[in-house]
Length: 344
Image (cartoon, rainbow, N blue to C red; front, top):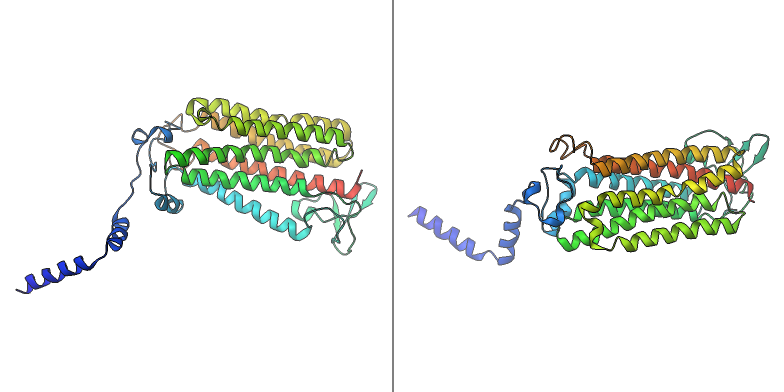
């Protein structure tokens, strides 16, 4: 009798639960499992050497929340989200030292290079290196007003690339349409990073030669826009097109060798030109190694399934991209300090 009464009460309670509450309870109880490569729809099949731990067509809510769970995209997401936060912090710190726009505002710091003395914002506090001697006991102003937007454009390009990459790896598993859109934003971010990298590299060394400066900048901007347009083609994100993508982006970045060589021929006697070239050589090495790892899909090619969660090629590629971008940030600070100290 007591059992029957209890059962009756339970049935009544279940009847009182609204459809919305039932749906919420079902979502809580339902678990979205990770699947293997063979179980994936075609739009998610990019690397057959990553065998397991895939999310496949998850609801949007679960897809977003998976940023905090373990799967084969976890480190792909966080390597670039952390990189984005690093560049956001660098941008905030730079803004606290010198304002956006044109130089000429009061700053703390004076510098000495060789036998010449000049004053400008203490960029070395951002660089963390000491190739200049900095005296923080004086409060001078920048000697030569110079546009700072190329420097901030680069930071914006780097943050856009890293944020779009992290979002792409997080959200692309939701649906074919979402994957298509996010991959195009990812490709646009890569192009944006490469193009914006040229602006400090070209604008500051050739600030006194507007024709050469504008020729280089317009050329790379047109090249980047063309790559973004080509990336809209559906075939661009296919696995078969991987080597072509790698070569295209590599050629785009390698075209920076031309203005770098020109800079050395024109200003090779300047310590700033030499230092920035060292940074740029390191940047190209990081990017070049990243492209090779990305195109060859190593080390997972050698041991399929071993590097599904950690250590596969795309994660290594991401780390190398962040390292290259940070190296160019250091070079950009030197460029800005050089031009601000000396003008034309």
